[in-house]
Image (cartoon, helix red, strand yellow):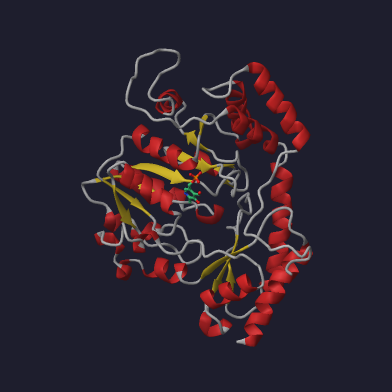
Length: 378
Ligand SMILES: Cc1ncc(COP(=O)(O)O)c(C=O)c1O
């Protein structure tokens, strides 16, 4: 038995389109006879997303990982790219798949984003770009990072997988840098079952991106301009995306309420630090992340994680292990834990708790009661 409804509490529950609305969309797709290849639904989705995010130009893809990989081609990246170890492995894998060496930079204690003060010493003559992640939707220090990139002639590619709808300084966070990647995976705040997007700073990039997601075929021509891949979103996924755009503001509002309730119930617990949105931004409440200080809380992060699982509360250790400690990256010179002290400490202390719009206040109270009880038992 768990949660107010007696059901296990998963880390998230995907937002779903209304089934009747979905049936109508599917009928429209069936009637059109076009299931993929940049059809009407994909075109509509791209237009509506530009409107919703207030950006000039974007393309949608089969997932965020392929979108990021295509972004590396679009920006002609090679050699070394400076990135963060505190991310989902896809960020780093994409570099490796493009024969680029990841160079890990340590992170800031308060946002868990790449520490801009630690980037410059990592720049070499082989560096072509900086790839920061807006971790848990909090903006990286875009102003400082872009000033540094300009000084050294580097590209800036943001992994904005968590940052759908986040606004910084009055504009879409995804409109900063040369390019930003959004993930529309089913576990994200906004999704298309699987999917992703690239938001372009220069709209002229779209044409090449659309060719690269379609094997390298430009428009209706038969010639391949450069070797591309298959990164297309299909029509049914685009229809899900269109329907969820109608629900996303309400979902984020509900997440905000749940976030506040968690904060109210956990703010004063010794040894718990809550990862909060930066001042002045428009936030999307993608995750509720706490950091456990064992000396004050009484239990380690892993012990609390196990206790919650025993109560059918499926917390996750995001992001653990650090990418720099994964077997395929740990031998890189920049992976030395002595060079990444904050990232290693944070990865060993963070715990993500269930958060989604359909959660009730009773569910939140249930999770927080278990956390209080675990502490008292220690
Ligand atoms: C930070 C980060 N980057 C990249 C990805 C990959 O996105 P996708 O699953 O859409 O390929 C994810 C999540 O899945 C992520 O959390």
